[in-house]
Length: 294
Image 1: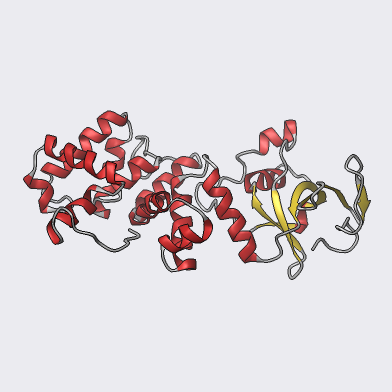
Image 2 (image 1 turned 45 degrees about the vertical axis):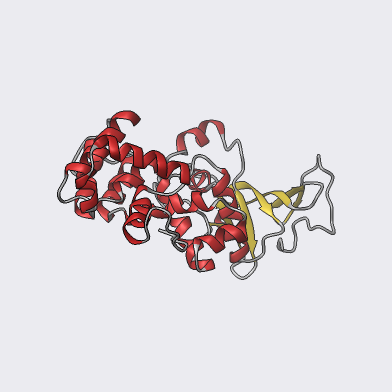
């Protein structure tokens, strides 16, 4: 509920008007699900539910906000316990406005969010739809969803997400802390740890790197960063079939062409190559395993 003094669902303002009460200006949509309000920036915080936990640079948008202002207001909900507006999406806009010395900020306040859990669910839904959510943030979302619902399968069913998508995100939980730091440094404008090479920041590349021992991942990421997709896949196959310190002895016993065939079968079945190998080893080619979130 929006605090007393601002427009409420029972006090419907005209869509084209701005009603000012106690330094808070408000307009609403016709369904009363959101409200556009201008609030003192000191009454705002970044919500714990905000899915962007990595690659945060507070001054990223400062210059553009100083010259052009904020073109699209951040999303938020009002927390009556803290008497603040918690930004669920658009924290760089909020942080940029603070860095630019703004005293007030326009927000899109969601009237149907009144608890942190509801805020989390809204943020999860948005993350599934948004293309610009980085891989590290998606990995964190998958971990949170598994913790919340007990398994990725249950989370997918409850939230209406694709299980294959959640599993893909979840594989990134195995990335080493030094590689995560390097990616964050790269995204915030600082040089990657120990190298000027470009660190890959796509789910497709990072999930392959995550399968290798953690003490090898940063060096591997630096090596593979400049490669295009075809070159990357070729190099990964070489590492899996030739590196004695790699994933599994099974990969050392098959040729590149055979491994490529296994990849095609795994892709058709929408499972990983490792899962396919596990089935052949444990249950035979047609074996059925239980649900695995990893």
